[in-house]
Amino acid sequence: MLALEVDAPWGVDQLKVVERPDPTPGPGEVLVRMRAASLNYRDLMMVSGFYPGVRGPITPLSDGCGVIEAVGEGVTRVAPGDRVASLFFQSWIGGRVTAQRMSRPLGSPVPGVARELAVYSQDGVSKVPDFLTDEEVATLPCAGLTAWRGLFEDAALNPGDMVVLQGTGGVSIFGLQFAHAAGMRTLITSSSDEKLERAKALGADHVVNYRTTPEWGGAVRTATHGAGADFVMEVGGAGTMTESLRAIAPGGHIAVVGMVAAGGEGMNPTALISTSVRMQGLMVGSRDMFEAMCRALDQTRIRPVVDKVFPWTEARAAFEAMRDGAHFGKIVLKF
Image (tube, rainbow, N blue to C red; front, top):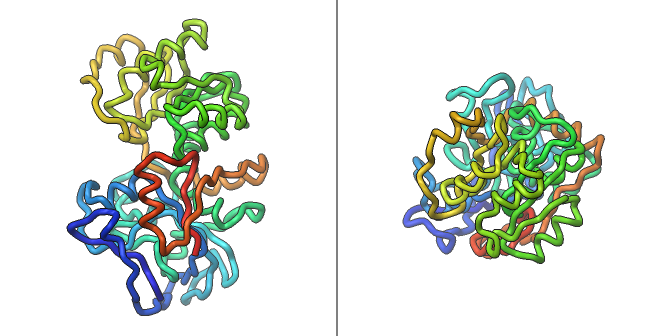
């Protein structure tokens, strides 16, 4: 089989296609022939050598869709011919998050999905909605589940609440689609008016260009008649946290899921104490959460936004597109 591999000195230009022996599933394992994989910002950091604790060589990417080609002894969850998605955390089936349950994410230390054939535990894959394409399914395990968990597992939100989404990457676009379907009001930010128009077409109630309105927290206050947002999907990190704190309502929830924005001021904890704001770090979710999300997708028929598709052997070009911020929604590799 063929696989993608990257090692020190790291960098997108260090990605290469290598030949590896075809794997065989052991007891409790499944062999998956990959059909599609999607890129996340974490993958870009890993390939670029900026992700903590990663040692090469690695087979990158955590999010994929494939078909079960063979199963080992004792496998009961899936059967040959089933279409499945890889699960980001191979050991987090359900329950609260623990260090042990988060210890085996795909990409590193568990080899990722950027390969023609992959062997995983039967507990590390899940069946997926039939109406979605392979490329759409490949967007679900990280970006889709992160947005789902932030909105519906961690935050106590209700129809009519105001949700703020930062940027138009995968997590934020999923958040927009999920929140809109649940009857929430939405505001999304971007530096591109063209992308904001696309967000409106997906149901965004308010849009703000943060390039022309850098203090967008004030725009959130205006849109909510001074009340503030009930929820902010914080993907920027230090570079956007000040505005998130300006935008959030007393008792609101800030889900910290990324760190793509540079700069920023030091955070004053007084802002949290005086307003009872809840700020929670968030990294993907469990298999139970993933399967709940898939049931909701079946009910609502929400289709993930796939913006760009590349042949999987052209992963360098795909990563360059992500690095340049040229996408709206998700970038996918097709096998």
